[in-house]
Image (cartoon, rainbow, N blue to C red; front, side, top):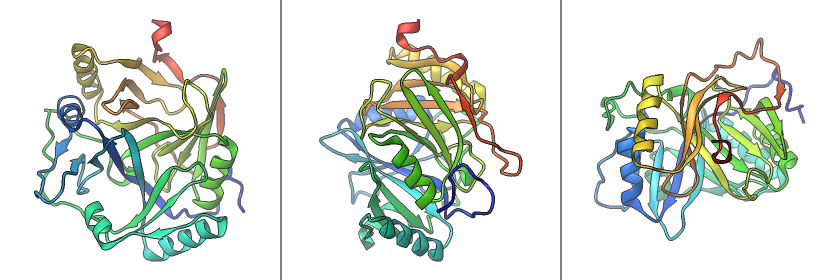
Length: 304
C-alpha cells in the first residue's frame, strides 16, 4: 500500500469524474433547473427511454436523469484511459473484498461508453468504472447565454458524500482507487478530505463524516464549474428570483479558492455552481489542513 498523502511515484488509473446518474421523482422540475439555472444542454430523447441526459461539454452527456420513486444519486462514473487500467483497478477492488459486476451491453449503450464495471464502495455508494466515452462533434448548445463550463479533461466537477467510517472511506479511495489527498478541512464536528483524480482539478470527490446535518449514505452536493464569475452571478440571481432555498450564500472557499454558492436542487441535495478553482500541480503541491471552508461569504441560514 502507498501512503495517501504522498503524491510522487504513482500514476493513477482514474482520470476524472465522468458522469452522474440521478434518480428523480419530478423530471419537470429537474429539467427546469437544468435549463433555467444551470444552463446546460438537454439532449433530445431518442424516444426509446424516459431517461434524460444533460450535456456540458464535448462528452455525449455528464448527467443522466432517471425517473424514480426516490430522489438520489444512483451512480457515479469514473473514467479510466485504457482497458489495461480498468482491468488492473477492477482486480484491486476485488482484492479489497468488494464484488464487481460487468456492465451489460444495454448499460454501456445507455451510458454511451465502450465498457463499464459496477461496484459499491465500503460505504455502499454505487460507482462505475468506464472506458471509451462517446464524444459529440456538434457544438454545445447551452440553454442560457453563458460562457460555458470548465469540464473536459478535468471532468464533470465534484461530488461530496457522507461516510459512517470516514477514515476507512478515504483509505479505500486512496489506497485502492489511487486518488490523492489535496487537503483537509476540519471544523466543529466536521472532518472533510478532498481527493483528486489524475488531472489538475483540486478535487473530484470529497468525503465527510456524519456531520453538517447529514447521515452516512447521503449525498451532500455535486458541483459544476462555469467559465466566468458572471455566469455564477446570473445563476445566483435566478435562484434568488425563484426563492429557492440557499444552502450557502455567494462566497469563496479557503482550500481551492473557488467562488461559488449552493442551493437545494430538485432532488433535495445541494447543487454548487462555482468558478475559478485552483489547479493542482503535483510537483509543488503539499497537503494542508484548514479550519474553515471559506475565506468570505458562504453564509449558512443561521448566519444570515
